[in-house]
Length: 467
Ligand SMILES: [Zn+2]
Ligand SMILES: [Zn+2]
Image 1 (tube, rainbow, N blue to C red):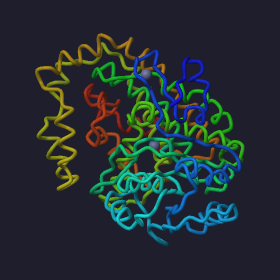
Image 2 (tube, rainbow, N blue to C red; image 1 turned 180 degrees about the vertical axis):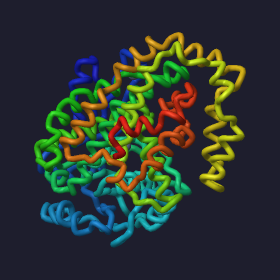
Image 3 (cartoon, protein in one colour; image 1 turned 90 degrees about the vertical axis):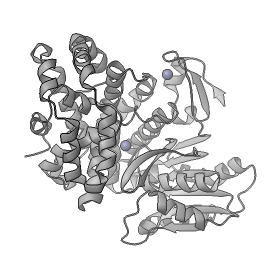
Image 4 (tube, rainbow, N blue to C red; image 1 turned 90 degrees about the horizontal axis):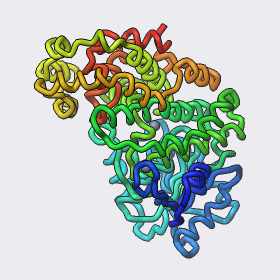
């Protein structure tokens, strides 16, 4: 591992420079490291895949295996398989899923694939976007094989993350898996991806303006750990790609290259925290995961992760605006304690909504619940430090109207309708999101302060996500 000495050097390093690095943090004192050995980003870099594989193994690969989604086999052939074959590199093909199948990064699918991998495989290469990246991480961890990821779309930030989103019994979990030995993003391939995928990646990155505020909020209110470094390492990338929003929306290769680098850095912002996803995933991700959950629960249409995250981010930025502008003098902790829903009420409601799946929701509810005897001191403490909370948290927030304008410039619709979700689905995600995942976010504070359920509809209106 190479040691980076100064904060200035660290913040000016690109993703390639951060690969295989360690850094003693001046803020939190921890050593932040990147266990991914090589990160390559640029135009025409696919050619480097054979030599990267050789570097990883210390010899020419004898039995490389390429994992991909069969549903997009023609795309993978055109952009990855054929060009690699021209360079004399012909891995064994390992298609997953099939035509018309919507592949998911599910534990059972990953386990079945791991069992089918030829034991003589010496390196796995996952070529695809989110699902293939996460599934390859899972297979490689199970089979203990070295692996690299070739990202084929700038659609999400998971390539350089040491965790993967894995679905177990219809619920998504963030899993710690073996880090990739190398990650390769070729901007020429990314620019050829469907525009909706590129826009989804844009939406996934917009989360930065919400999730770091949520993370800081959790540290101020619940005493959770927080470090500002992840937010800082992605600042310059955000400025660059936001400045070319319109061009990104037109798949301009140079603009998409900025997005590609921002996506790699965003993944690293979690990796340097040992896989803690808070620097890239707050309440806006909870909202997206909740909408994914409705796919399983009620058969709703599945959308790109980042597209949902982008809309969730605008909703959360508006909720932040709403909450921080409240007058704390008008919030009465005694009244809140008297009127808040009881655990029994919430549990019964969850059972009515989710049936046998309500248990995981109710576990989260009981873990987060502030006991009656602690409630008034807790809320009073928040109210008495109101201004300092918002001046601290505000450092990590962005203006909702600016973010919305940039997203629109990139051609992203903010309407729930565009992701096949109704106003009711929007309300439900805001109100039930905090019961879905254990992480403390503004969604929890909104319940604790009695802002929810009443303000939820107003938040949707202000966000411009409903008519
Ligand atoms: Zn730190
Ligand atoms: Zn995401």
